[in-house]
Length: 270
Ligand SMILES: [Zn+2]
Image (cartoon, rainbow, N blue to C red; front, top):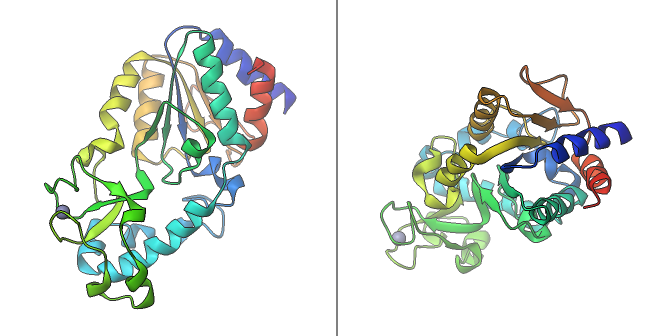
């Protein structure tokens, strides 16, 4: 572990120009008690029909069951606390800023743990569990620009009696309200809050890609990986379940982020 931390720290130190791009996935929140989205965890959200329910098609067909599923899931997400991995990424951002470097954290997680920990340059490409939006595209509170805090959508009646007429409505147009998260049958560029064009701009300045707790099966990881390898940039992947490098050219460090990242910060004096 000590060697791994020193190796990662040395790799980060050697890259002294350009953007340090960090991509996090469910693994970074696992130590906060949140189930993995994919992977071998028997409690993985993935195992519970997420590709069927987590779609716009399902929302349009059965918004009651859709919201019941999401509300239960969001409750757990929003009750969680940041763990040492989230905190170490804040320290890493400050370390990078302190030496005049550029930093960008792209997370696939819809929990709010990175911002709770204090990350500043953060893009939530899959949206956020603490926001909702109007389900009608083009409404000022819906895609592609609008959203509002989930606390302003009142689910009290719906929780007492889950029926369509008890679902909260858009305050601007009266359409149904939906979660402000990327669904499986939707695209990154459907909403500006997903920050996908900012990710693309970041790729042009990227000097190193650091993946933390993510499989490489989701769109944004694939994009960043392909770009980094194409430019022959250093690519690190921290994943306790890694069986080996996900692609040639990627250095896989088999460790839990909440253990390794604080040790890396220790090495860096961050
Ligand atoms: Zn509306």
